[in-house]
Length: 91
Image (cartoon, rainbow, N blue to C red; front, side, top):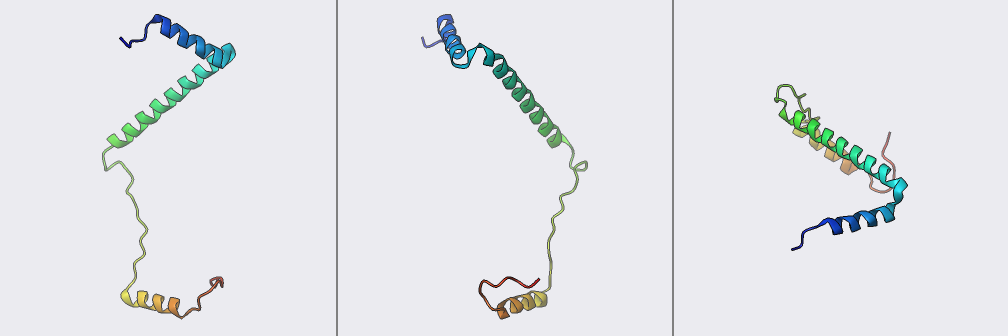
């Protein structure tokens, strides 16, 4: 019970044919095939990238700004001394 048989499949295909028309079905099938091929290609590339050893991957570089406590205090003092409002910052 509940299986899809030949009559149900034929009715389903006829409904699809009526909805999309005979001219659009080949275009629809082609675009679905291309999308599937592109998806599989992307998955394969991601798996290949993940399989590379860590030595072959370029190192991740993080740009960090470091400053001394004195520089940080001076920066905060300068910020606090400036008037607040909608004035643009100096260039």
